[in-house]
Image (cartoon, rainbow over all chains, first blue to last red; front, side, top):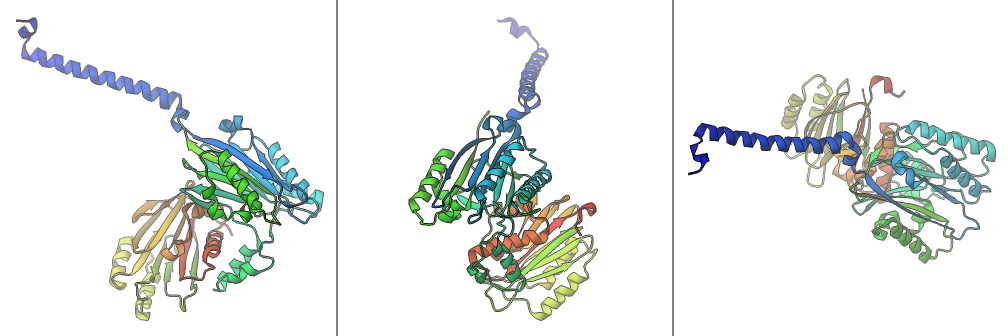
Length: 293
Length: 186
């Protein structure tokens, strides 16, 4: 007979309770340590932000000179300040399209780091750039601007003109920024008269810009609040040379595992179309994927 | 206060047969009726009865308005009733009418029942025909960039126009923006 048999039932029950309590205490303590380390001490680890994969193409079409410009903020600072990408497309047929688009992207570069949440101030700063162009070039040229900023799984964007900011989600492409062209005004007017809108698209001036960088105090379209991005989203910032050659709805067909792969597919596709009047085409592809940090 | 803008477009149909009835006060009441392929349009008598009731429904609780409408509207009518003020939106939906809310950078379909709202939240309510060509990111980005409910609607209509030149069925929708008094734009 062991000594255990001599212990009374009450004592045995107490020992059992004590053991259970000990196990629960160890479990709670371990969970507390885990919670403290992951959420209190290092809250960013919990966020596991979307990882950004960026690639671009910047090609001259059949135009005499490259009038597109682009800017991508330093990738090594993207965790701290977010990623800023912009594309500017100089207005064809005007004298200083190339200089102005370069001026715009250089000015955006000088704004680095750009505050992510100060959307209204950023829009004001963009308007000031336009006013400086207005003063310097006296409306002898202009350009578009499409700019995105991505930080902590959220996106803000700014747009003047008709360059594109495209979101691909679940294999469906959506142009996020409204285009500031004449057709939008015609549609508005037709809808108010209760009419259908076929006629708006046949107007010879349908694609003419109603606002652009280089105009005095242009309307800067911008997100008033950041937009949530999701794992697997792709954002493309491009000049209209891309979407003129590839209808935006079909862009998901050119998707690839990496941003570089997708940028390469898009670039080759535009090139292979061999349009005799192909505009310059520039695009920055940003792929977002969840990654454990 | 609630800023709003309505769209009532007949498309390629001979007549506009959907309906929107509204009542304005600190709480805005919206009743949208969708006359889809399978429904008969409301008779003039039914329209008058519903219109008169909505015109005088200020201050009447949501549930009471809702139960009254089940008496006034023929069974099977697709409709959505909305009560919205600075802090709360209450919805009752029957059939192919939907409402989405843009809140804190995200878009969500609104379910039946009450839902708390805050300054600058944005709601779009429309028939299935209206939402047919609109993706959720499109509604969201237009909601986030628009300066007013009118501009939000214009941008959504541009997107629909790109796809069908507004040459299909009736289009019916309303955009609503919650504005605290100090943010009201004149």
